[in-house]
Length: 116
Image (tube, rainbow, N blue to C red; front, side, top):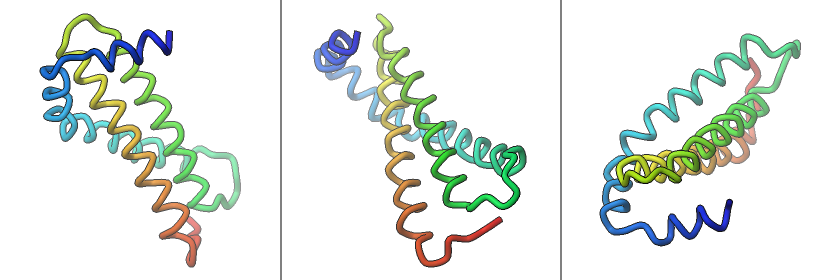
C-alpha cells in the first residue's frame, strides 16, 4: 500500500499539484482549528493535576498530525484529481503544523515552560 500510494503521488499530473498548491491555505484552517480544539480538550479533560503546557502542546500536535496525514493519505487514493489535490494539501498542512508547533513547544517555550 505505501509503495502504491507513493507511486500515485509521484505520477500525479501538474493539474493535481497546481490545485494542491492553491488548496493549502484552505486546508490549513481546519487543521489549525483542530489543533486548538484538541489542545483545549486536553487542557480540560486530561486527568493530570498540573500538566506542563509544553507536554499538552506536543501531544495535541501529534494527535492533529496523525489525523490529518491519515485523512490526507485516504483522500490521495481517490480517482478524482480534486480530491487527490485536497489530500496532498491536507497532509502538507498537517506536516507544517507538526514542524511549527514542535519548534514552538521545544525551543520557544524553553526558558519559561509555562504552566496552566
